[in-house]
Image 1 (cartoon, rainbow, N blue to C red):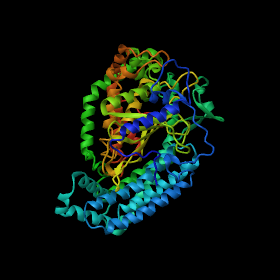
Image 2 (tube, helix red, strand yellow):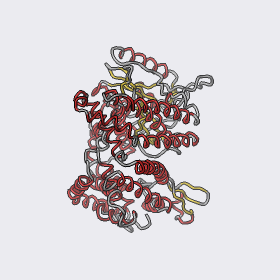
Image 3 (cartoon, helix red, strand yellow):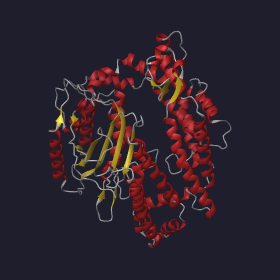
Image 4 (cartoon, rainbow, N blue to C red):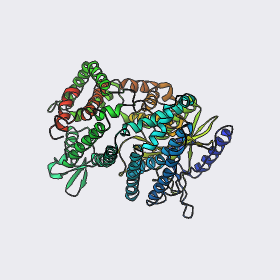
Length: 616
């Protein structure tokens, strides 16, 4: 059901493809309205630094979200879902009757792909689409397909046919390593879903999994909702820092960068104030996860979740975190002492270092010690310049080029979204990246990568091209300036583009293991590597230039920026260790000996080192 506007094959036609894409973009650029900039940008840079005037196409055909013809309206999700489920029934029948052999693995992967193409797309739309009707329809589809997936994971007939394949040594030895690995992963999915249980317990496992789908959604939604407080409870001089809703102030984030200590303290205490519904949901969620894990044969949910990762067991994880804490202890204490001294210097009346101070004062220390005030750097990091830098890096390292394309009518969910084609110099078109980069009131304020469609080799010999979305919350361009990024935003852009290129270049025969569909503790490796490029003078020097003058960012400024990242690095890492330990404790021994909040308090004071704040 998924059709991509341009479906070129691979191979010798890549030069033609590049010329076609270049020609297409040049035509687009002639319709562009230039901002008040005095330097020229490459086509990719211009796509992000120049306001593109999209044609108003009143009579053109709406191709649907991502080119999926059913998705011209919210009701299309039901159509796409029913189509996928119909195809699933046929493939289940085929998988159950096909004799053991490599073909079984191909059918399983096709089955997985049929469901993922709809579920993954819906998973993105339910959080990112500005239209509530689309979000609601997408969420219903996620739950419907999630329910079917859980039932398939306890389908004895499917499991037995795949098991026969792996139990037959002659057939097993005839399989290539990739096919064998994918078969083992499918078996693993059956095992952690309770395929070995009797029928009654398998039904219970399915019901628990379906319940978890709902609890996950409720908890995530609740964690993003703002908290409200009567405006009269706030001092006059800080009220203007927050959004108003009638007589109430709404706080939907920690305001971690606010220079006023009282603003950060108020935001921390109000945003993190416990709500009974959310606490109840968390308790139910952890209990449900534990019940499922024990039902299918694991001591705890942590054991179940870590099986199949490189870490393997909770014991390995905790040993690692304890060793890391021991190594960090003295350095973290020094970092907190530096932050305390800085707070005493700026605010001597209230010098105690609190959790809402860590992100702010670590930033102040970096800025003071290395003079890296973000406003000094931002003019050199226009979004277009950063995209040019990524394009140059990918072409030099990988022989891969990014080309901006004009989306068709109905293809994107917001006018701000840019579409990039990823083209390899010899292999041709590799896939598409949709860039949803700009802040919107109704979208999650977090940087993330979504797989919309995984790559795989189809039965007809064509390669199914991957499609992904990168979501950021960058500032909008103004009439006189393009979007200007802080160094942190630039680094996040490189990080997320690492995920996107992993999806593009992690080409496998099977979509079950394509790109970022790898062990979860490996999935961050390519994106972390990209952060190193964002901190290397040899790379940054190639693209960081002033959006008005074209002047390159001086080497001394880049060096200071790189050095500044070492300031308070131990405290930053210790905060991550605290989160990781808390995660292990919540999903470890059950029933929990204390409330989730008491466990948070104990862990924060023992592992992190900054005091717990009552009623958070």
